Length: 382
View 1: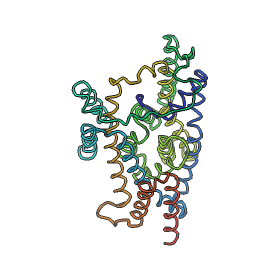
View 2: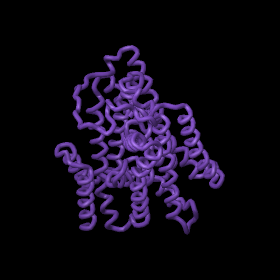
View 3: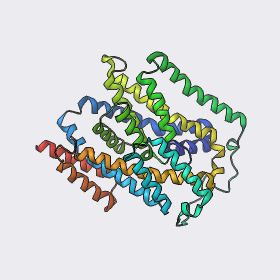
View 4: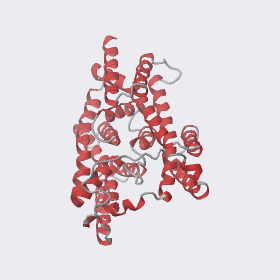
């Protein structure tokens, strides 16, 4: 959680590295992502190629309002875990106002929150920390537990550290240089390398933390997708195995497919290559952080110099996710703007999904499936 990047994939990489050295980390991290990449690429192709078919359109009609409820539920879950003081609530509210009313860029919000968190720790730590429940879980003995001497390969060595940094830099620079040489510095592939690298470096606290930034850039800045298509991508990300941040593969595939980056006769190949580029540059920094910084990870435990800014960042992210939930709700319930017709069927599906998530503690996949079934039935009947 202290590192930027998708923490679930980083945890998988860390476990693989801890047990089986560098190649274990690479295998664990890559296989955590690969099935989701393949599946989302195929689903994104079906979406753009056959999305106008009545059955497919009906399913996604039901998916959209369910996604708004899921994002709202995510904000609630994150908020109940992290907003433990008045200061953290204030940071969350300020971030909501900053992104909704002032249109402050997401990276600037994270930076400001981190600065506020650091200053609060220095000046009045009791106002930041709030209350914790102090619960401690009991586990069965682990293969490598707290009393096990650190494996030899986990000890910090300057040579190994430098070797990983050089390898990571080459794996980042060489593909970017090749794409820039073949596609042009302002080509879409080259733009994707920069954008998804920034996504990787801004993903503090999970995929929901960076979704507003991806949405803001992919829809408003680059114009790769429409708001409705982005919501459909989130629905596919929620219903497929793997980390939710893999929605970047959907975003990139749709952009590459629509733009026919490899020519009109190779639309699928263009989309698939774009999805691969997005995945590579989103996850490469995570491998680098773990393989280079693994020996230093445990040293951060209990270090308030690091955790205080992170608490503030997470509080800010909560406010941003609330804005995202409201923004998605607006586009689902008023697809043509406030001047258009209010979508009552979508509102009913959204309310049902909200009830299932908040009151019945239903899982995401059953909610998505049930909402899709209602959307399909509604479209087929009409």
